[in-house]
Length: 208
Image (cartoon, rainbow, N blue to C red):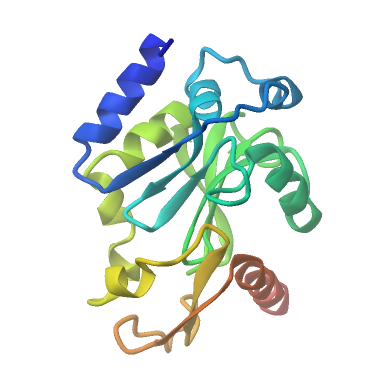
């Protein structure tokens, strides 16, 4: 039976001005919430319970109870990302540009539970000042597109319409460089893990 909270979330996604695709799950991993210490009657709990993953405008991929065919599994993929980024954060989403969204569980200064963004145009973590429920509301709002305004080129949707959950777009000159002009820059679809590794390598070289 559909919970009231999931019904409300589904209605918000349906009414969103953004193109939100919910990959609804058919085989639920009963242990995933207990492993994460998340209650089922919460926004994160309901998304993990009811979805493999959520894709917004083909740009942002929200992690849930993924089967590694349509989306990452939020629990197992966090174990992978910890190898590169350390622990005390819960990665909840990424974008095709190599950006990562993570909930602060003690890795950053300030309130725990806030969403931080690893920005591919600065190679630094930024505190968005919003909680996970607010993050889900934000990706459903018109303000979402404003956030990515400097990353957009004319043929963006054509170029990423068939991109998979484990791929990203390598932009060169890099987004963080002064030489990058988004419309004329080279764009190549690459494995997402390759994009992450390159961003971390450049971050280290630049001493950030």
